[in-house]
Amino acid sequence: MNLEKMRRLPDTELEVMLVLWGAQGEVPRSYFDQQLKEKHWNINTINTYLSRLAEKGFLCCEKRGKMNFYRPVVSQEEYLAFESRSVLDRLYGSSVKRFVAALYQEKPANEAQIEELEELLEEWKRRG
Image (tube, rainbow, N blue to C red):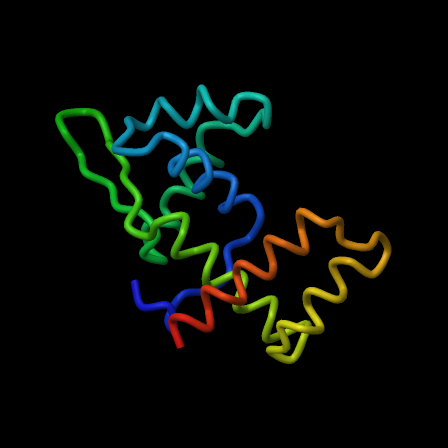
C-alpha cells in the first residue's frame, strides 16, 4: 500500500492488526477469537473489523472451503512509519527537535538514551 494513501486506523482495528502482525503469517478466522477473547467482542464485531481492514487494504482474506484465512498486506513497520510521520507532522510541525524535546520534557534523557540519539544522528548523516 502506498503510504500516501494510508490512513490512521481506529484503535479497535489497530488491535486486530496487532494480533495479525503478531502471528507473523497467515491465520484462520478462529485465531482472532482466541487472541481477542479478553475484549469480549462478539463474532460479528470481529468480522466487521476484519472486513473494514480488508476494504482499507491492510489485510487480505482467502476463503478455503468453509474457512477464511487472513494475512497482512501492510507490515507493522510500514504502519508504524506512517503513524510516526503523521504524529510528527500534525503535532510537532515536522520538527524532530520539538518531538524529542517533548519526550524528555518531564524527565531528562539518561546517558544511554543520549548515546542512542547520537548514534541515530550519525546514521542519518551517513545516509544523507
